[in-house]
Length: 231
Image (cartoon, rainbow, N blue to C red; front, side, top):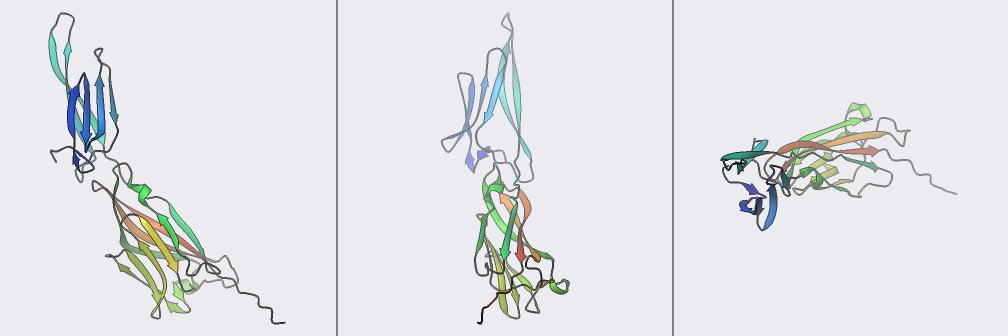
């Protein structure tokens, strides 16, 4: 794009008393101060929008140098502004089947958008499970767990024998919620800390279109048998 923008708003650059000032939507985006001795200071205060697929843009500022006896030369100072990239945040949670069935586990991925600001977060239909799974596969009460993807609403649904076992909802603003409503079959029924790991994939895109893939990890610990006093 030939138009310089910040957050989708056109950047206007003015020169006053030796200072270049770039503004967008009434807010300063950058300043460049040039001193008579040749020293300069560039300060960027807000992100600049990069073209999709471009990781840098160049700002060119004109200036004149004049020697002792008055000869002048026009020249240009180029400032290269590298694009920021989204960096998915570490999202790890634990659920204990003894006490957490039906209790939502929530979080927020939005810190990963970076300096360019938020775009959206979408599920990428990538689900994996690992850990201590009975028979080496994800099951619930002996029935295979099938995970489906609702891209439009950002929902992973794990179901077995026609019943929902868990859901993971990832909203476009980066907030998410995991709810487990049915048990998962762990390989070692004697270990209350036996763990199954569920991984839910997502794609994060910042304001100017840069994308990165991330994963929300949920560790599900086995439930413990309850001791009942029948006396």
